[in-house]
Length: 285
Image (cartoon, rainbow, N blue to C red; front, side, top):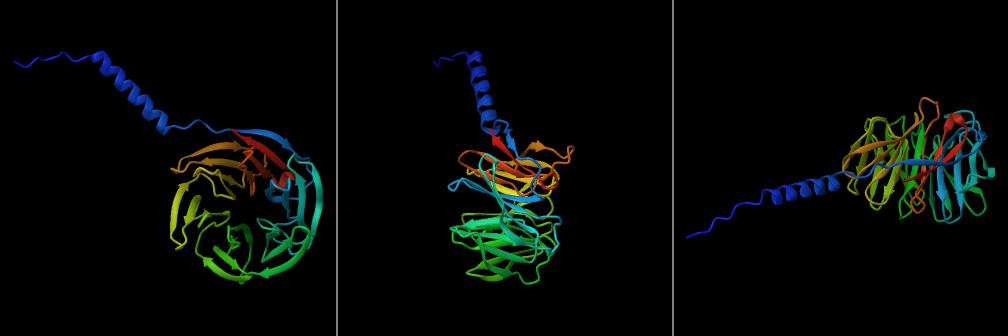
């Protein structure tokens, strides 16, 4: 004769409840936040990009001057310390309307309308100017771990690659192309109409995420997630699975959030405010 035991419904309810809680904790991450640390006075003439060099304790700031596309020679690169104190706003002068920057060893690569300007950091001198064929509005720069430079042109919808001083078209027909970030062998791209794209080494384009706004700055967090800034005054946290959260919204105050920089060790986000003429820092929590 087979003994039939009565099911323990209370135990089953507890197991189901714990399972649901575990699933929710796996699928939902804690809300990310930005806490303001400091902001400079409005003394920087249209800062478009900030690039931190944590080892040197320096923030490089691309200062456009009076225009986003005029070849007027009044743009340059300035230096702040990591607490926002001005070191030298005229560190490198005589550029036109510099925007994105990338640092490799002792060289700073700067997008300057139709050229990529190479600055020797120890001497603060322009040592090379690389004309980009057919360029109209070079925007962002990134350098991979092998020293290969990538630069976007928002008007021609192209991404150019510079290897050992030789320039060539790398990708084209990318609507709204702006922010770039090289991560390992991949190139992350703000473009394609409010998207975060990834180009693998074979140039296959993958849609990582769709965002409410077109992007300006892209910064990896280090765990597959990204920070994504939109010029109008928005910063988003983008998860590896494509979800996004709005971290900062300053558009009603008319404070721009252009090409951001990020210190992954201290988790500090540096924001150039463009028309507000300042740089602000936020702690990512």
